[in-house]
Image 1 (cartoon, rainbow over the protein chains, first blue to last red):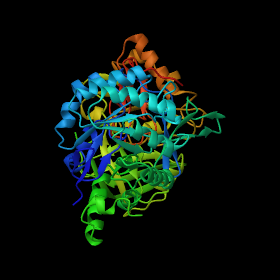
Image 2: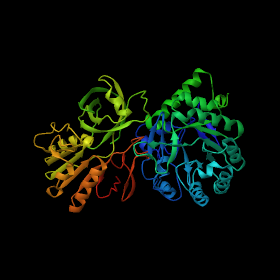
Image 3: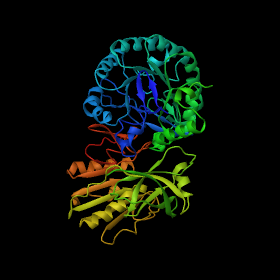
Length: 298
Length: 247
């Protein structure tokens, strides 16, 4: 009943663990059977390994948190050599989240991932924590189109583009991505935010700004998913502060064919299972026979 | 060892000193000294779980000693025995105690005493000779519960008890074959450097803000000579020689 096809890939349900909140699945595999998930997005990967940001990387806020990890990752070759076999054994859809500091690095990474056995690639143009790249590509539509155009040439696998809520015009951005070869859109990444240590009289984060996530962003993320879904004809995967199955159903009704669960994995490691079960029960009680019936109902 | 995620009963939650509390929770585990748990009050107005290191553990329970510092720990302090708390653990690595009969110094600063009490008792069980150094800003706490075979050295910055000053002023690493420390980074940095100079092994337990507590989110990293390491998963206990500690 909850099965869904996205860009030709079959997901057993519409619940996907979001990039950056789930590592490569190892840590959570101790908490529950990950084959129950619709899919897993890897930690954001770059062609070259990245050490990530120095200083404080996390700050709690009302109903959420701000992070400044800065895309720490072992590099794509290391992921392919040391982590992908484990992920492939989990019997769920594997989506590689691809990031980079330059178009060239994006393309090098895309080529490597495209020749691997990941199921899909999620092009991350929305990380707010990397000075020289990431989100810079996700603010102006023209920059996004440039990186997407080059990556598309290197990728024959299904290609999602993960949008930043900090884009100048997120609907315009999504439409441009569709026109330039995206097979699907996922949104939203974290909101650019900041926090100040009033006793030290300094910003908490070395980069001054960092990415806000958690339930506090949900209503805005939902609005963006709604607006983008109305404007494009490719699948939309919705995320942003989803903390329970009711939130997930809202995103699906707003137009998402699947949802990603991020920050809430930190609060309750098996939250995705609760959400999968909740969606199923809701569909049964309300006579929905498929996710497509529920999708875009408003 | 895998962690478990449960809703467990609080057995005890009492004030030990000015802003220091002890909480005992039902939890079956084989927790090692240095490990920690993530705790969260259900429906808490604070968002993230809080990492608390283990003060004592047996087969049926784990105990935590915590200082009320912010909203999260304040909420903990108001909880009552019989209430349920969300608890995940045991997490992280532990102090290496796989040696015995060696002269060992355990050095804590402030609430960093929490994991060191459990550690010192376990070291004693393994026939180590243990000296316990604990520094405080003001009035000491939990210094009287250690086994009488453990020699305790106390310091206070305000001079209210023991040595008037810092604990590092009365510690001489040359007298020991193993050193283990937990407390404020400036203190641990001094201890680690003293040990490094004398080439004495020093294990350092780091503290950091955490989100997932299990190694997935990468927000709790610390700098080492081998790159950024996760305090929650690669630590919290690190070799003092490999840590790059910034005040």
